[in-house]
Length: 118
Image: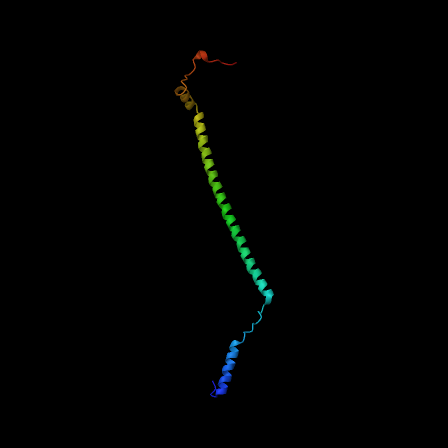
């Protein structure tokens, strides 16, 4: 600060006035259009990420359903194979004869009971 009292007061006055002045706003370089473009770009990026996330979720869900369908198909094929084996065992002559004798009390027919067709 200067040594002279009048200059000191004057300088102090300038300091106080300059501190009270409102800061002038510089207009934004891009303006309103730039801000709108930025907001649209951000919203577009968010929408695109939501769509991609939803598509990925659908992909995982369908993939899980396909995997479950393959497991069900494998189980059904295995059950079908077991049932075919059981059916062939039940249709065998020796099993049928044994079942007829033990369960139903049947016996082989007498020669007089056999009728031959022409």
